[in-house]
Length: 245
Image (cartoon, rainbow, N blue to C red; front, side):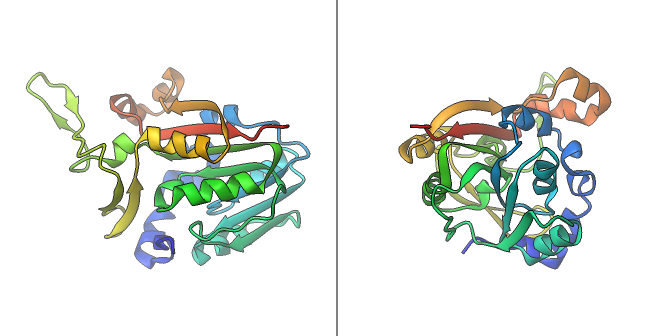
């Protein structure tokens, strides 16, 4: 079973105070880049893998999606999502991504934001998403960039020339890594970009777009703290699709 860290009281309290938890999609720096990778929502049946507070589910409906299914392993997350949603076309259900079963050829879009690095058996999940998508369906997701997940220590250091450096520990050694983020003992699963992309290809997806997120000049001007993101990519964004034939 996926580690359900979001039902840890300490973790959930800290997570609830994050900018993106308070401000939703607009407060996530990578959201404009993800939005550009999404298909037109009107008339789509959508599944959100790891829906959290339901921000994307509600946005998809506002953009014209017909039905939205939000899935999450955390009762805390689902409770908040349900409390903030008053739309019968959005359904929230509890689901473990390690054991997920979707109805076959049902969804036009599968979406996931910063969830897949918690999943140990990503190949199984990709295969299930592929099975659940209708012909021509899209799969768009963000994941913590593996080079960001691989530091030997949090943060950056400064070398003799004054340049920031980010330590990277055994990038090519894949597997679970434990970090202390908002709470102790958070488990994330490190895998290279190549592994993630090849898992998609092997499960029958066509790769449409891959982006290592970089903030725009306008974003940095509005939020100077984002300048740090130029030192290493924090997010990996991927759009894949199922053949329409």
